[in-house]
Length: 275
Image (cartoon, rainbow, N blue to C red):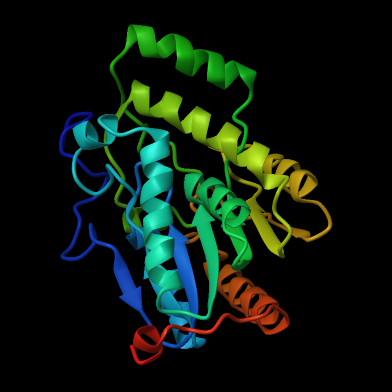
């Protein structure tokens, strides 16, 4: 039995797991963003579903992820945003419309991208994080001065489908400094959510032990009337792989299709139109 913290990832990655993925074709593009310390596989199932529905999908890999915990510790929350923006810009060059969706921290990142990019026509979040509460934040800020690393408890799984956790490839240890960066990022996301004017589908699992389900209402209140909230009684934090994932995939595909049909499309550059 491996000791705590032994190895880099929660479960051994297969070939391609630690790389961004590209699926589908067409001129409607979706950027999918994984969570804190995560990797693209947690968004792969959603990406495959969207590609089957006619979307071009880019599964992002954020700066410092998919390599080593030390690499993540060497980056900041602004680096994570910059890497997501760069991947969105790449998708924009290929598509007439762009949309964004994310899991957990990736959901918070989706809020920031939608606020900063007026050409994003809609967004969807799964268990998006904008507030962990003052007590958790206090523990994180104090813990940074006491500990260098945090080792997540792999046995404390909040998923209805316990085996689904094996689809995740996350760091086995996380620098406390990176947790502080996470706090700065989600605070920024909630602040910028007030600038979002496009349709937003905000989803959360009621079994989530990582991000309080009340985060969904906080996000919706910040966005206003264009936000729709959906709760899932059985789902835990990693909604994109848990028991309700098929329904979630379908909801996002239908939401994006409807929003895309109602939104204007830009003209592609000649080189992109032929790609």
